[in-house]
Image (cartoon, rainbow, N blue to C red; front, side, top):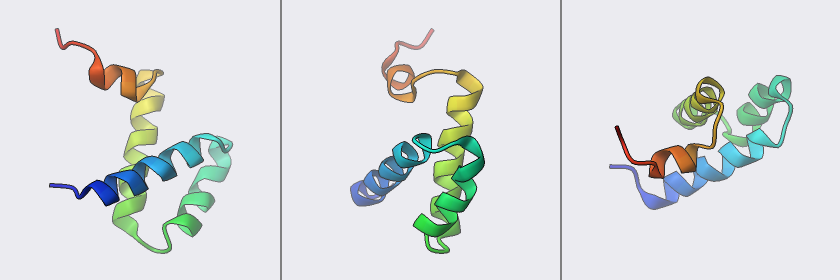
Length: 66
């Protein structure tokens, strides 16, 4: 189970990455994550999911499943 502090860190980086151009995100995450490859992977997976779904992840997480 992921610790709340870790999730907050991932969420912070995810939102900060969204504020940057797509081309700038890899360099931003490399610097912000300071070599933590698991952290980069987690944030990248959220960014990829947002790209695939084209929507707001929080809204989709709260939406009823069909």
